Image (cartoon, rainbow, N blue to C red; front, top):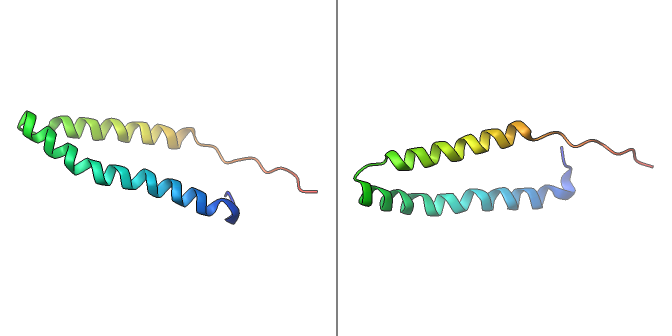
Length: 69
């Protein structure tokens, strides 16, 4: 969709977006469990992030192609 020229930038950005929650998530879940004796708040946070992610994908559009000269 975006071509090979932008592939490296896109993959790098998406990997960064994946790595940060993978590192922070378990620590945050442990802190929430220790302070509330349950995971309900963590599930609510995860559900909220999932909703934002789904809405972002629904709003994404295919870029229009410009005519090449």
